[in-house]
Every structure is written in structure tokens, then in C-alpha cells.
Image (cartoon, rainbow over all chains, first blue to last red; front, side, top):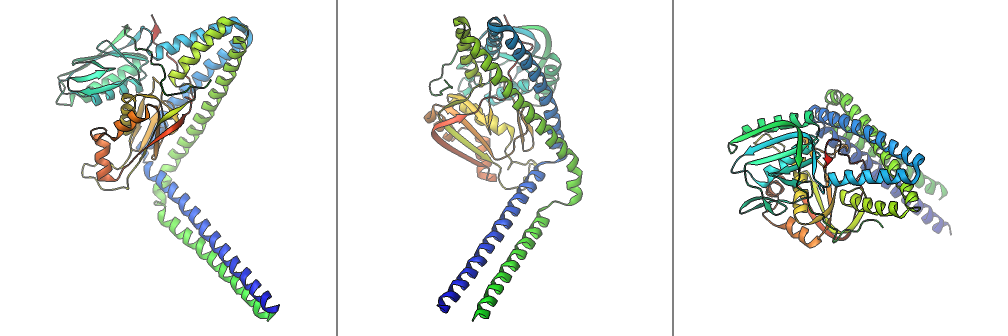
Length: 228
Length: 243
């Protein structure tokens, strides 16, 4: 019996050592991992990147504040106005979403960018349209063909296509949105394009009212299931 | 006998305590080695704090928007329950919202994981081992060409107005906080077509070259059912008006 008791005690001791050793390893690993995370974020966060992030976040937060104010107004209208207010809010949102999804012709202030370069590719067009989107473009068209993100831009043997239709250079890009921001973006874009040997012409002009008559076709979901 | 057993327990405990102390010392030592020089950290600390404050505010605003949208939807549903015309309008808006990325979506699709390679010298002076916003933009574009019906990037839903920007390894999408590697792009749509498009050797030439040269991770995984979150802010066109 005493022998069994000694073995049992020494067994407990060994288990205790293993448990503590395991805890040590766990603590050390957690410590190391968290430190590696800190190191990784510090490594990426050079002052220029941090300044960019601060600028972007300021703009984003300002925009979110405006959205909160608009939604609060909608909520108040619905709370006080009943069915008629609901119809009004829903109709206004439907119209907004049709504009955003490119389903209806639109007009508004903006810029017209003209780029003439025979060797430009689908990637160049995507970059130009993305730059204008970053600059606040709310509706865009290339050579009269409507574009919203989600519409395929492809490189084919015959050149660049938007939704399967060829858009041959020169590209005339209509972008509706805040003219100050768009002009700033277009200015930077055309300056950069002038440095590209392929580019013959890169200009822009600000217009008080641009009309985009083309629309994108509605694309019903074939695979995706929205909530019921 | 009892004394021997007690001394064994005591020595075991001592070994454990020493192991614990060694573990902490080891972790502390490695921690000290991993930290960048303190002056460099100090220089960036104020900026990092600003980013973190702004990110917290951004998160709070987006949560507030999500809550407001839910309250508005409830009020609209209540009104739709009392009127057929309101119900018809609500159904139209629900369809438009789904196509704009304002609702959850699920279905078959693919996940694309992108991660930066290990830091390595680059003769061009660029950091080509990083994943940039252009990489994300290129993958999203290939997916849309291959029939994606909805896409999210590291939990941020792509909408018709989405725009990609960034600096270095920061990736900014719309009004969201900066995203960093690793990035997960999830697309719902024609799974086979999207997988084939991503695996086409001629697609994403820049990313593929850096995958081979700088060990940038590009992992493509098909799935029978993937979920996309709803866009967590509002979509507004304040300058473009319907004719």
C-alpha cells in the first residue's frame, strides 16, 4: 500500500510538472504570437501609410455621419407619417438604387475625361474608372456605354469591351458626382497619363450637367439566394 | 518514505517553477528582440493612436447605421402589412437592395485568399511581396467577368459604387477602415466558371508572377455555399439624378 501511495504521489508530481510545462509553453506561444502581430502591424505602418489611413478615415467618417443624419430623418418620417410616409421613403430609395445600379438614365454635374491611346488595355480602363469612383463618381459611361462596378470589362482580340460591347479609343468617360473632387481626380489622372508613352491625348473638362442616357441590363440572380 | 515522497513533490514543483520562469524570460527576450527600436515606435505611436481612434469611430458609425436600417426596415414592414401598394413597393426595394449589396446573400462560389510573401529585397525599389489594393481590384474584376453575383472582401461587401484605394499594404474599400494582408475575397455565383477563370494561367499575370517570385499567397477554394455580409453603410447618389 505504501508503495502504491508513493507511485501515486510521484505520478501526481509528474502530471503537475507536465501541466505547468504545458502552461509555460502556452503562455510563451501566446506572448510570441501577439508580439508578432504587433510587429507585423508596426512594420506596415510607416508614416505615409498612417497619414493616408487617417485622411481616408476622416473622409469616411464624415460621410458616415451624413448617412446617419439622412437615415435618422427617414426613421422620423416613417414614425410620424404612417403608410404615406412609408410609400414616399420606399419610392425615394427605389429611385436612388436604380440610379446607383445604372438602371435608369441620369444627369448631373461632373467631368468628361478624354483618353486617346491605341495601346491601352482593359486594366487601364478599370484603373481609370476606379480612380473616378474613388473621386466620388456616382454614375459613369465610357463612349456612351454605362458602367457600374460588377459590369464586366474584358480584354479581347478586338480591344476592350464593356458588357461585351467594344469600346474603341479614344475613350470619352462621363462621370457624374462632386465636381471639385472629380476635377481633382481627373487632373491627377490626366497628368499621370501624360507620362505614359502610349497616350496621345489625356484631357478633362468640368461640366454643369452631363447626361448619361445608357443603362445597364437588369441581371437576375441565377446562383445567389437573397434573404426571404 | 514519506519524506522522500515529499521531497519528490517539492523538487517537481521547483522544476515547474523554474520552467515557468524560463518560459517568461524566453518570451520576454524574444519580445524585446522583435520590437522595433523604441524611437521608431514612438514616432509612429501618435499616428497609430489617431488611426485607432478613427477606426473606433468608424465602427461605431457603421453599427449605428446598421441599427437604423433595421429600425427603418421594421417600420416599412409594418406599413407594408397594412397596404398592398406599400407591400409591392417594399418588394421592389428588397430586390434592388439585394442587387446593390445591401442585404445578406448566399450561394455557391469561391474564396480567394491573398497574403503577402515574406519581406524580401526588390531591385525595383517596390515592395512587391505585399498584397495591394490593385491586386484586390484585379481579382474582383476577374470574378465579375466570370459571373460573380456578389462579392465581399475581408467582410466588406462590394457595391456598384465601390472603389478601391490604398497605400503600401493598406487596402481601403469605400468608407471602411484599412484592411491588411491576409485578405479573403468571397464571391457567390457560377462556381465552376469563377474557379476556371481564376485558374486560367493568363489571368492575373502580375499576381501570378509575384506568387512565383515573392511567395505571395494566392489560394482558391470552391464551396457549395458561401455567405456574403450586407454592405454596412448607406448607398447614396447626391449628384446624379434620374431623368
